[in-house]
Image 1: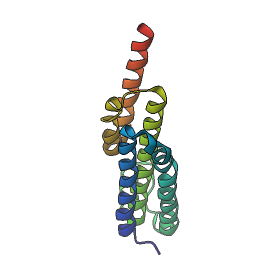
Image 2 (image 1 turned 90 degrees about the vertical axis):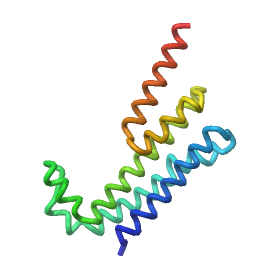
Image 3 (image 1 turned 90 degrees about the horizontal axis):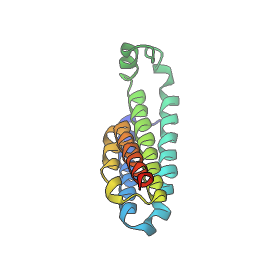
Length: 147
């Protein structure tokens, strides 16, 4: 039986390794060979497995909650297994998007200094970091076509 509190902590540490790998890969090109696949596929897959196991384990306690209203979501996340699963969901998806940003920027030759603020913002506030990167990427593409 998985302890949601322990999984919560372990998952956070694992995700941090992925984010650290992405930050190193920004400035150390040879690290990209391992950092990009680890951060985009391996670590999110491990987190996804933990998510599925927590959902399976807590399934009997989820009847009271749901996604139809804010009150139902609040009730659902009162269950520790659902709350930890939700956290793993965020960790996996934000890291996947951070790795996509890093790969996309490297492929487009975008300066690491442009990407650098996008990664912590994606880690902390996922969609806001993605939005910042997409805005920067668009601005750079428009600048190139204007020249």
